Structure formats: structure tokens, C-alpha cells
Amino acid sequence: MIASGPLEQQLAFELRHGEDLQLEEVARAMEVSLATVKRYLKSALETLRSLLDVSEAAVEQQAATAYREN
Image 1: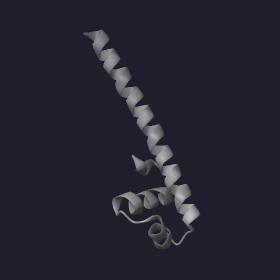
Image 2 (image 1 turned 135 degrees about the horizontal axis):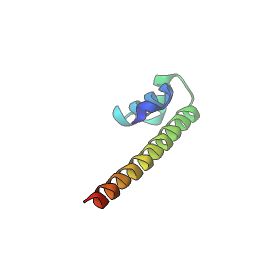
Image 3 (image 1 turned 90 degrees about the horizontal axis):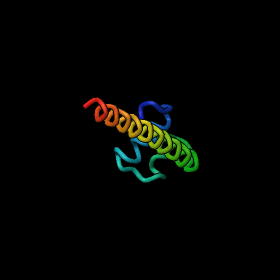
């Protein structure tokens, strides 16, 4: 899911959550400021939330359609 966002967001998310690095470690690894890492992570989470909202709506629509067809 996160692959739909910019590469910097993907990398920050992977380092923070996949590699379990602290924010300061992510900043050093990416050679950016702590504020930039926080911005990347916030944007990545917003992307995930919007994708999940769309997915949930699509599943609900499919379930309703299937229910009506039976």
C-alpha cells in the first residue's frame, strides 16, 4: 500500500516501522533533518489512511451488491 507514495515516504516508513529505527536514526540514515522525517512519516500515514478508507468503501459496496444479487 505504501508503495503508492513518494520514495522518500516509503523509505522513512520502512526504516521506522520495518527496521524499527528511532526517528533520529531514520534522519541520520536518510541524511535529512528530524523535522523532514516526521513530515515524511505523517504523509505516509495519511496516504495509508486514505487508501484504507477507499478499500473499506469498496469492500462495503461489493458486499452490498452481492447481498442484493442473492
